[in-house]
View 1: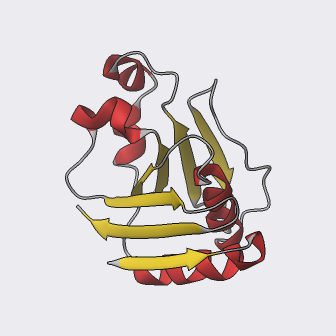
View 2 (view 1 turned 90 degrees about the vertical axis):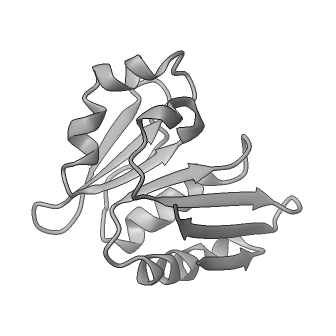
Length: 140
């Protein structure tokens, strides 16, 4: 299990590094948290920590964004907030992404819970105060 509390965006880079060190072999991450909790912000910090220089934004309308890392590695960033049913996720080829052995960061995974693989890391981000966030993660 991983747990960290941050009280400033200045701590995001360090938190992202520690997070990735805690899950060195995992590739599928499901991010849970209320609107505005900081899911996209933390995913951006993770991508930066992994060496991506791409423009990291929430894929709210596209459902998935692809970011490059060093070499041929990719990061797939999903946002299922606007998904009305799990079939919409299947229509974009979710299975292919999940089994690509690339990093998959999913926001609002509760919208497609029935499609999620058993072997993933659940990440919960809780807003304690306006600037204080608690991030905890564990294998499902």
